[in-house]
Image (cartoon, rainbow, N blue to C red; front, side, top):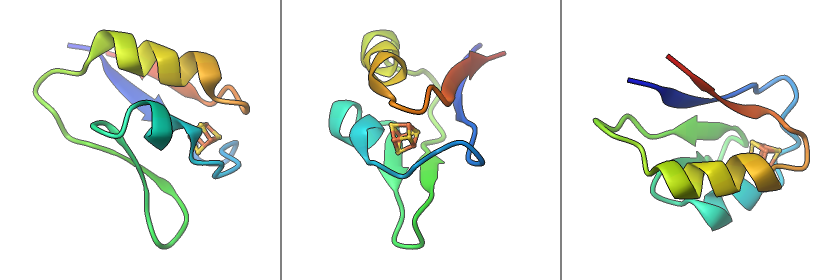
Length: 62
Ligand code: SF4
């Protein structure tokens, strides 16, 4: 199964991923993006988040 990963060293903490795909991405109070631990990820909305991330730091991994 593949799952989304955020490269935190490049993330600018804009919150777009959470706006687009809140079921997967969450900007924590301490200011980093947490990826939900799901059995299956919503392909389309993760793709949207990847496409809209201004820092290009979300990607799929196996
Ligand atoms: S959209 Fe990209 S840069 Fe913005 S908070 Fe999410 S992972 Fe970070």
